[in-house]
Image (cartoon, rainbow, N blue to C red; front, side):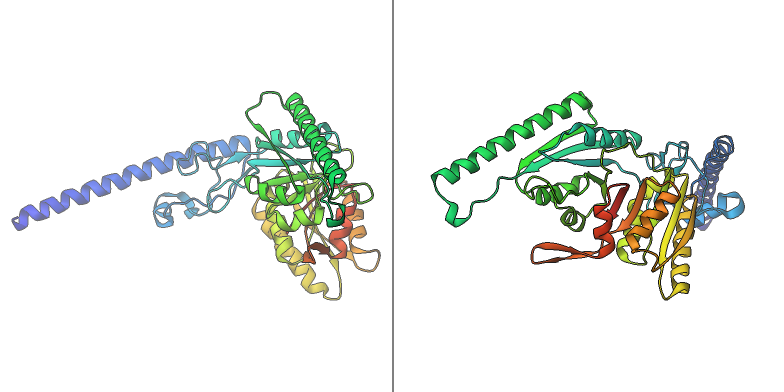
Length: 372
């Protein structure tokens, strides 16, 4: 190819690249102009990190706000299907472009309790988040000891297994009656250890809903071990109040302690926090007041970056035990949800918890979201 032809060819390619870049710029400017109009009209704000080249954005965005774009996502090709609108028109998108929402909620049902109250509670939350609901029930007959093995004992175990099967069928009927033929809900049941099998099935859900712990009346193989499910499910667990009163989560108390568990709980509770009218990050102050304040301030700033209305509160140590102080602080702001990390470890096949987690598990006056 002659030099003049080569230069002409290169020039043609450059011109096409420039025209293409200009077209991309025009498209992006139109997209962002449309976004700003919708933001101004609806008052929506979201910090959104888009998965496209920042340098390209910088060259076409006014004001250089390439990495943080106010958007509702409806007209933006890079965020299609990634943004979810909450009940108060707020939106939440993760830095990876994945919606930080509850897409699937799993509710655990006890074979010795009516399904309707807990199902109604869970179904209400599922509809609020436009999530799928999975109802799960399990129970197991009491195992026979070697000295008990015999004809009569085997018959007792068989009868108990039949009873569990009948109860599972009855729960399924309650589920069908409440949910109807919705394609947003499904049923799972198994004869086996309820804690173990709920932890296994938790892989299918973003959030688990269970009832409050009642150690005086519960039978270990007929319902879950609350501590066991917190530490083995790998999912946040929402312990509902007695009576399963509808939860608004308008006011939420975050029981903050600078640990991995608490950090995980904050992120796991984000769908509730973004919808809340008021979030209080409560820290029980010990000897190191400065560190506690700095830690809580970081969490407040983190949540504010997500558009959450939040403040911190320092609770004095020594006035009461920590759990009582947290519950009292929740009552003071009329919170019906406490978010907390779950602290414990396995000890001889049982779960040993610290005093705060144990006390929160036992307090059924308020809803508690616990993550570990």
